[in-house]
Length: 151
Image (cartoon, rainbow, N blue to C red; front, side, top):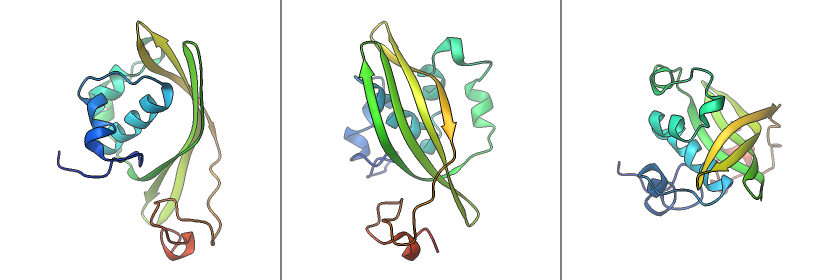
């Protein structure tokens, strides 16, 4: 893949999420969550299965993920993250567009560390709050929301 900016928005792909996608282990829950978001954007379905705790897969497979539907992801905003020993939490909004409609998955995800690896377990979802017209745009363009993705 020849992409510059990391889909998660935290840096350059080569030094941000790509090492995790190629086998490096995230050292904290936020790094895992960001790499999972990037995997959704890039269609790295097996990575999503490998980083999802097996006790919480409920029959989910890479093949099912590959079959879609596929989302037109716009950006990721991390609101809060924490780690307490082998447990972690990340509260985020993953913005996407369906046609001209902007929405987000707003979730407080839980993570657990086992055998030196972090795994996603499950999440509690909340209703997303759209930015105000004069708020910064969710895509990090530097423009106001009304002049960018809010059009």
